[in-house]
Length: 371
Image (cartoon, rainbow, N blue to C red; front, side):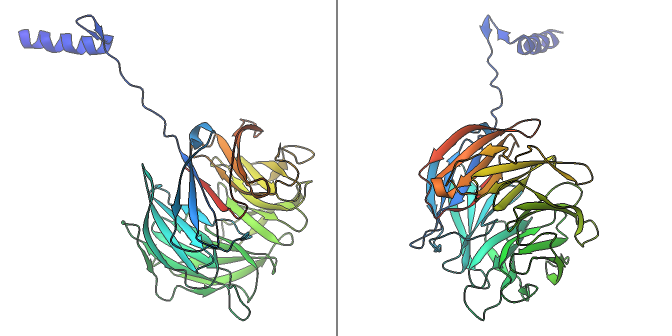
């Protein structure tokens, strides 16, 4: 009976938050601060710039980490130059100037190089990851060399192992590729081909080999960047006329849902879709703005603003890569022309409100990803 009384008193004290008159402080769980990553793409030596605070929308520098490879010293004209694994343990980065890719271990102190391997071609510009399967897009780099995609296995230690016979050509030589990415279920790889105005689609087998591609005409000319939404929806920016299209990839073949809807701005290039699939945003490099679209369940697109200016980054800012925070509350955008990263709060209606800006970003910077 006495033992039961002691236990009850202890439990009661814990529930009331006091023992012997002293308050018991229970620390509230802290939300992860998150981080944003971009790379310098410097020809003298590529490195990754890390900024903490993504979960709150306000970034602060948290270090620079060498990839061990080289950049090109200029824009890559691509999306996906940096990629995070879904468990956020590893960061993958292309080194377009030295024809290789670097994998980093993400830890509390920053980044630690895990491996660096040949990309399987020349001028890697985009990398995609699905669990332990990695594919890199090589843009050629010189006359007579074919663009390709090449596959790797990502080990639990972050090391990359080339998959034999995984290198596959694009739909034709010199297609001007811009991005490679997996479909949400990992069953397909998609590559945008700017010069060919085509979407190249590969099927991915259980052993990790990509077969194909099949080339499908783009709804608009110069398909540039893309992002996946819910229900196998593929949303693609089209730079030539600054338009955006959506496709259903449910059958494995892109079927147009919304055809080339204008942004009302210029040079819609980089694009992202929110994790809940409700909104898409394009960075309009020519007009210094961001255009937002609402997305219906069926995948139809509707502009959020009649003039296409959901947010303004300024004349000459040349907005490029976009990335959403891990909690989905903030959108970050790399302004290469203004040497900064801007942060916007994403409203429940898709509106964007400027909350922060961090300067000192090199004009050669490329790629943007957040956790």
